[in-house]
Each structure stands twice: as structure tokens, then as C-alpha cells.
Length: 277
Image 1 (spheres, rainbow, N blue to C red):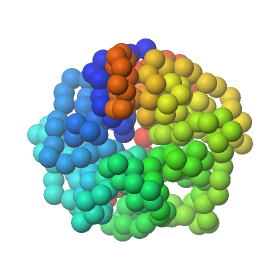
Image 2: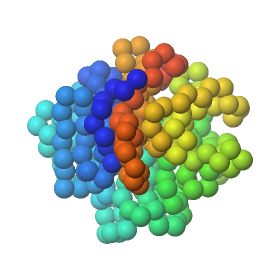
Image 3: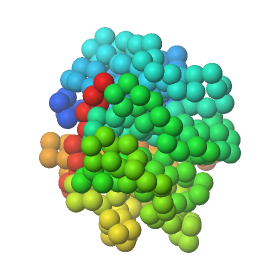
């Protein structure tokens, strides 16, 4: 069940690269990008990525989006700036959409109220899609390309927004799709599988839950980490669910908090979409 036993302070942004058949993930607080075999540490806080080609990622940092050359380990200057002059905020959750754009959230380093936002970068255009976000999370997309999801974790609600079928830009106002306040769950990262089930890491609840397209709870899997952060499907047939976690804020024995997990045979995922610049 444990895929990698390195204890990340704040593991995030798992990405299964379909051409390399390799998992990438971040330790935000350590400014580090990991694979099973290698790690890269940067001068910037980094949190999420999408794949451009076999050897290049698009990486989100506290100042913007960068090309990352995997063989050399070189991180470019930002190709677009995002809140670069705002010292309060950093990037957080993000994922590529079916059109080749990248959605990326920001938040305060200390989770300052309403300090963050959610953006989309597509064909050279950066557009702010949601503002006054405290903890940006749950960015993922339905397999039929109809909807995007996101959350502000502190609200305990997952939002849904309809997307234009040609461009992928939002075509309506966001609405509450899943309300977790009664359960007391805090939605963190999420991914949608090939059948439309949305899998959410539940911060503080030591579990990842699956919710059907109508919001019905259909599965719940415990993990040996109090603070799971983000899931991603991968493996040769996309039936492995990888899950990052965090040990930040945990005072007692860290144990398996912060490790990266792999849940086998949970469901069949979508292939992560390619970034098209």
C-alpha cells in the first residue's frame, strides 16, 4: 500500500506521466519534486504539474508557470506570471484539462482567509476563474468534458462549473455539487475516473472517498495517514490510485503521515491530459 516511504511535510500534486509511465509528486514545503528514483529541489515553492511531452512538464510555482526539463533538471523562467508580486500566496492544487489548458489554484502560505484564487492558462491566456479562495483544491474534470470541479476546502463544499465544449472555458456560474459539511469532511485534491466517479482525498479523515456523478457516496477507502492530500490514477492500465499525504502540523510520531500510497484496483482512471502551449 505504501508506494514511497519518504515523509513529505506537504505531499501534493501527483502526476502519472503516460509516456514515461512514471509518477511525479511534490513536497510543497520542501520545494521539491519527486519521482521514485530521483528528486529535484528548487529555490521556489512548487506544487502541481502537467505533462507537455516525454521530457517536459509545466510546473506551477509561487510566481507562475514554468517549463521543467526532466533530463537536465532545469526549471525555466516563468512563461506566465501568477501573483508573482504577492508574497502572501503560493500555488497549490492544479490539473490539466481535456483541452490542454492548466487549472491552478493559489492560497496563502498561512491559509489566510480569501487570499487565493483559481486560474486557467490556455493558449497563452491566463484568466482568473474564482476569487476569494482560502484553500484551493479538488480541481478535476469529468470524462465527457462537460464539467470542472474545484473546492475551497474550508467551506467543505465541492463546486461544479459547466464548460464550453469547444474551448473548455466556463460557460456558467459555479454551483455546489457536493456538500460535505454534515459529514465534517475537508475536501483536498481529487481526480475523476473513466466512469465519472470523483475520488477525493479527505484531509484529516485518513481516507479517500468516491462519489458518483450524482454525488452519491459509492466507495470509501481508509489510508494509514491522517492527512491525505491528492489522488492520481496511474500504472500500466490506469487502475492504481496513487495518493500523497502530509505530516505538517502533526506533533506526535509521524508514522506513515507524509508518505505516498498506492491503492490497487480501485477503479480505472482517465489518462492525464497533455498540456498544449
